Picture (cartoon, rainbow, N blue to C red):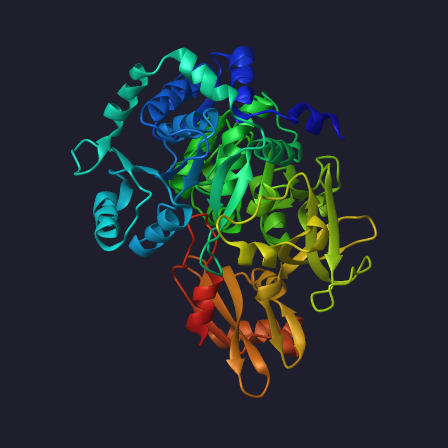
Length: 529
């Protein structure tokens, strides 16, 4: 076992925080776009207070607490406070409507809910919750806490809730902490729902720490770095990688409650950030922003979950020399594969690297399930310390995800080169089968992104009587640019095989997005007809 994995064996999240507080004390752990800064010592003290408050209200190890708000300081104190007593956090997407909120609360059987009433955009969270409680039977939900300046019926105000900490002694907290195991579930992380209704992956403390550490080894982060993250905390990128990074690397996190490219660029400059990460839509916004050229960014390292074409543009136009790639998922605590800062640029932007320490990988034929050879396309499977405990209260979907021998099916297609590096092709369900030929959506999208007028592109399938399925491209043009659908179809015909060329191009100005910044393809597929 690698040394860094061994160091985290048997460690709880609270133990990691307490060690970081002892070593780094008054140094910054988090900087929030709201303006507040939390040191390691602040985080330790606040998490202990929140933990005592929950215990005083009868919530402890194994109880499920839903958190429905964006990335504010209270999110961090709740996260570490709940982990400290072995309670299970259930992050809730802030974009959820009543039906989605009801599903997550009911499916997880959450005993408590904490939400922020006064959010940006005028969204009335209290009204949404009232609608859910009036129409749905949620017998498990007995405690509701609101960060609000007003009194909401059947709801405690957060400032009053925290005062309950005074009813519990420090000794009682110490006793509760002693019952917590590194193998305890700490998160029921609902997947982002880009292709289907979300599933609740059960993630445990030791693997969360290891998953975060594995992610940051790709960038070789240290306390000499400052990291900007646009990732929401209710996504595993935020709830695992971002939340635990300062404890494991000493690198402070500068986080944004809601992604806004203008404010993101300002924060990266003002906070002297040396590293960042994000999905393709984040970097598309940066690359097309008028402020990019005038901001004095000091970014040296970056992790971009995007196509090779976008990675190349980020490297060239944002000047990020240490651009690296990694591949993981919620169900693997973000672990999987990663490149190294020592790899050639072509490897770092064109592949997602090799398996991380302690992680096994196989590529299997989608139809037969047989292992494929290097250079052959197959579905990626992982096994090791990183695999989830299964989907909460969902044995059928757990069985679909887990293959014989403890292997996890990822649903992603890839090819391993002779050098052992994995190149992703796309999702199994994102393959468009045109007249018997498989077309990878990512290939068509990457080609369209090279057109000077195209800002973003998504390729999906549409049923067709003769061929079974044909391709439809949804395209967003750059500001001030113009193009006709036939022009883009002809452009694709100039560089792609005929069966890969979109039958139709539809222009869009806004995308249906999940709360994690991913385009919801299943909605575009519905629009394609």
